[in-house]
Length: 211
Image (cartoon, rainbow, N blue to C red):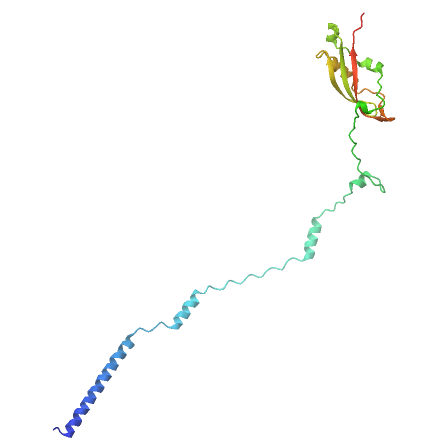
């Protein structure tokens, strides 16, 4: 049986060995943590953010004050030319008078022949003075007849002539009769005692007299 002193020595050595093993394991676990790289400093992040911020815009130049209103009005007044316009009515009329536009004349309304109570009357002597027998028909001994439609205004003036019928045709009778009645004057037609414009049919006969 071992002695008590030897037993205590063995127990002390065992305890010391256990403590040494624990201390060795602790040192080994600390060394990897010391060798790990340090994380980047937050100061570097702040520097990067400041570098990416755009520079402030340059200050605007001071605006020139707007021109005075009085100077602008004076400039416009210098460039203006005063022209006194007189209304057309005042230039054409005397002071104190009122002018009105002249109304356009109404178109003449020609009544039909059956709507009048008195036919127009021509002077046969005046018609014979201007009526010419067609030379070709006269040399050939041909007689003819023409029916004209006369547009006679209320003053008794023939304004228009239409050849309705010519017998024989192509011998010049129609044109000779129409030429004699153009612009002729007559006693105007009447309707209930009032002169009126009328469309009036007038026959003309061309005859040869024996020598």
